[in-house]
Image (cartoon, rainbow, N blue to C red; front, side):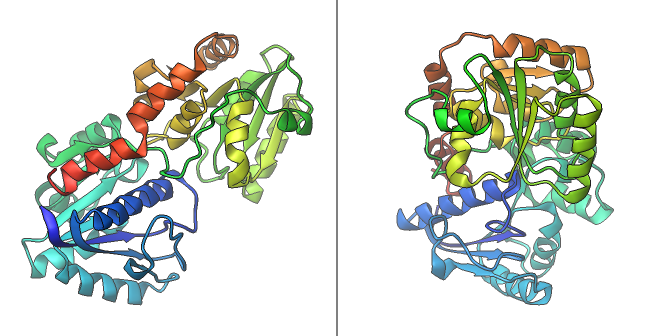
Length: 368
């Protein structure tokens, strides 16, 4: 039990970015906040290298410290507090050096590494590999990531536990699952249109997400199929996508929404007939479970951790992201598929809801 012990959670970004790793960190922070109020842990601290402020829904103000990119201060405080903590939880493999230094001084510290995906799928330096094999407990977000760690780093399966990501504890699950007229009007869509939807950061450094392959597939799909591609894009990626859309003659059928405010994200999921992201590099894919929580199935890639997020086919289907014909076939099937959206939503909430995640984390962290 950790009821009288101290936990240190160390992160890079948590509140200043909105990617999957950051979402996972926010959920874990809320777990620690709840555990403290439930007296399952004695105390906790959360350090973020790059954040300035925290969202206090997720973390107690007194527990949080953001270092605004000051690496020296972050390193000093992490080592100082880490030596005093009983359990150190690392949000990213890049933070492993701090655990290595702490263990050199106090070998009996418990180290837990959250392993998300692509950041840990490739070869590491020798000291990192040796350290995680022998000194670290690994929490992998998917079975795919766990297998990658076993295969690439020769880590014993006994050192790895799989704990899927969850819905954000403050995700506002919709009660009605119908398309919202205000968005249909905004995007000039009618009931006859079939809508594909992707929500993701559009980065020139992350072209494995597959939204460009969706655009290519769209050219061979019926005219009433439109594609809503949402997310903030960097300048290079924005131009690449605009050029691709023009080349395929799809200016009237692809809508680049740009950044979507939090209060409108759920309505965008509801606007979709299917969420599509045939990625090659998802450690898990929180967007897929958000779509399912809105009663929408997903099309994912079959070469990463996203199969966990669709429950191996219960919440969507996987395709080879390199197979254009397979992607086209999957889209044609999904946009016309009749299914019980409420049942799909309930299955998602039962499997990926925050309370279930918290209980599983309690078993790992506290021993309940």
